[in-house]
Amino acid sequence: MSSHTKHRFIRISEVKSTTGLSRSHIYDLISKGSFPRQYKLGERASGWLESEVSDWMELKICESQKNVC
Image (cartoon, rainbow, N blue to C red; front, top):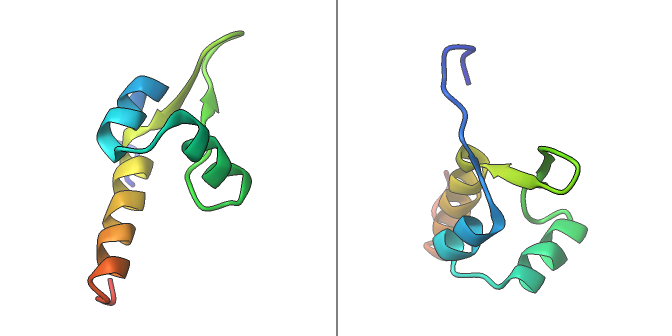
């Protein structure tokens, strides 16, 4: 990504809604290194880069269609 690209953090509720995964499954995938890690935004707040979640979803689509992306 270029330095001019705007980044957007999304919270767990949006990650769940976007991916269709449960909170526990998301954290399980993170622990296995199979899902993007969250970023610490504050003392009690974390968020994911929307672009990283989108890239993960694109990879899953390619894998399910047996395409090389």
